[in-house]
Image (tube, rainbow, N blue to C red; front, side):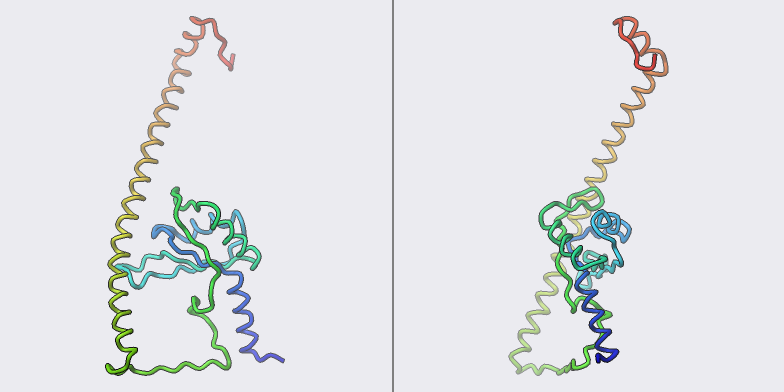
Length: 199
């Protein structure tokens, strides 16, 4: 018979199986935007954004999304690999992968798992590896900051274009409505011997 901790870990593994890891999300994407986009394909049980700790701010760019089944999770991953994913009116290079146990900060402890920590001595060969990883992390943070600025510029540009298009369409509909209500349409119809649809 399984112990309570083993049962808890088994339930956690099932949750991992039905969870999808998304990255390359827009920093402006909210939980409701992501839920609306995905609920066309599956029932979303929970969404957890993963903050970007190495960048200039903690804006979410990755998320763990738990769906109603492992089968639906696989279908969503396959669909996103084949079609562009629209987020906030813009096609984005969103990637979807199966979630891994290490991605969850509420991961329960395995009954036979032990964690051991040690300090590295400067003479240890792994000390140089750790220094290089630290350097790469700083470089990566600078790249993220630069890409984030570009991304926000692109999204603002798209938003401005959409607002301008909407304004133009509104002006056209207003002009058409004005022609229909001020009698101009009836005058033109009589002149060209045409019939207006509502007559």
